[in-house]
Structure formats: C-alpha cells, structure tokens
Length: 207
Image (cartoon, rainbow, N blue to C red; front, side, top):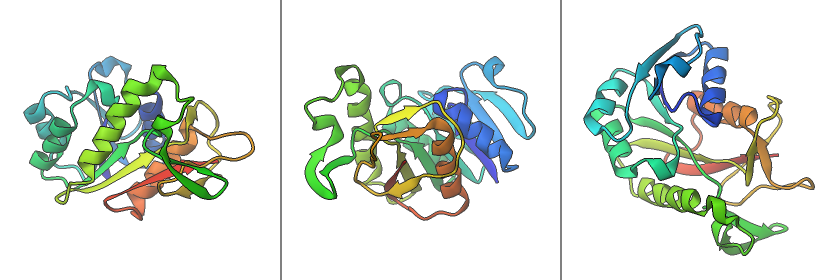
C-alpha cells in the first residue's frame, strides 16, 4: 500500500515506519523535521504541520491509508480528522492511548476507565485526557473508516516477538502487569492496516 504516516520519528511512529518498510509498503513520512527520517527503501520524507488543516490534506491526497502517530496534547482532533476528510482518504488508523480502556478485576469489568483509577500517574493525565477526547470524537465519525489502537498501560521499548493478545475495551494484563513493546504494537497496527478487523472501532494489544 501507499501509506501516509504522520509522526514517523516518534517512539511509536519510528517502529511503525520500520514495520511498514519490513512489509514492503510505500510510505510518506510526514514530520516537522525531515532530517530525522532515516533513509529507508520506499520512504519519502515530507515536512508537515498537524495544525495546518489544508496543508496536511494536500500531503495526504493520493494515499491508500493514513496512520496518525502524534501526541494528543499537541494536536487538534477536529483539524486532524478534517484534514483526512478533505484529502479524500477513508482509511484512518490512530495510535491511541490506554487511559480510555476499562479496568477489570480478573475478568469482571469494574465500569472504571484506567485514567479514573486512584493510582493513575498525574504526569500522564493531560495526554490521557486528550486521548479520551480524541476517541470520543472519532466515535461520532461516520464518513471515515477509522480504527483506534490502544496500547496496554505500559508502552515500552523492547523486541518484535509477534506474540501478543488483542482485546476490545478492557485493559489487558498478565502476571508481569499491563504492557506491550513499541515493536509489537507496530506489528498489531500494520496487521490491522493489511487485514482490517476493527472498522470504526477501538481495540487494544498487550501481552
């Protein structure tokens, strides 16, 4: 596919870029600083501003899909979604957050979002709140074929194992806690790109 990747040099974006290249997709890496984009086969770096709706729409035109991997606190959901709409694209995948996931006791949902739990780190609250708002905005979207992939509570550097679990709205965890590597997160996202299974839905990935 010909994929536009917004935020291709961040922690998640750089792993997604590597995974797309690994699978021989053609990628337009849209970033603020093109010098940070590694020289990889099939990758074209383009300078773009997520706050420039018309400029971003122009960069997105002609692609098969767009992946958004930008911090929620530094972007406007309305402008991002409008840019994708104006570009004529329909397939829109979003690197989501974990804050909006529901927590459970064992397999029993508690009706409580991760962001509302007593021990949620204050340092991440602003970004998580913006992520919840982004998902709420997407949930009303009927024009785009969107997907929002939430990681587990900890999204950390690690290895590409390809061994993980998928879920829907419940936070995934195991004996070691709730976590997923950036590398395996990228695998799950590109899997969804290639074989869509969560159209106009949020899902999650974890160990």
